[in-house]
Length: 112
Image (cartoon, rainbow, N blue to C red; front, side):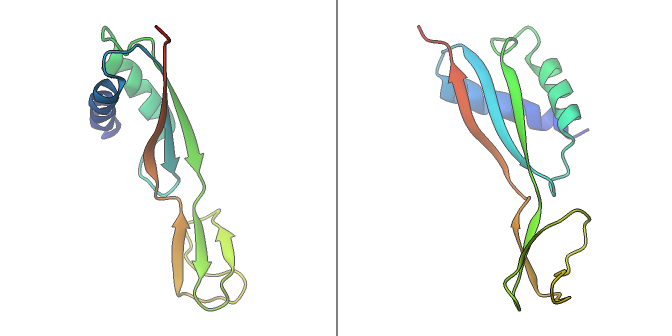
C-alpha cells in the first residue's frame, strides 16, 4: 500500500506550504495511469492526518483520464482500456498526453 507513504509525503509538503495556517482542503490531480487507488489514498489520508494539524483537512482528488495522440494521424483518444493503439488509423506510434499526472493543485487555508 504505497498510498500510505504518498500521504506522508503530501502532509510534509502541505505543512511546509501552509506555513502554520489551518488547512481546510488539499486538492490533488491524479492521472488514471498512476498506480494510485483514490479510495485507498483517501483512507490513508485519514490515517496519516489523525491527531495532527491536518486532521480536519479534506482531501479532494480529481481523476485525470488517460489520453494518447497518434503521431501518424494526430488523433487524440481518451483511453477506456490500456491499449496504446490509435483507434482511427491503428497506428502504434502514440504519445501519452494525459493520465500520468500527480499534482497538489491547491490548498484552501482558513482565514485568520
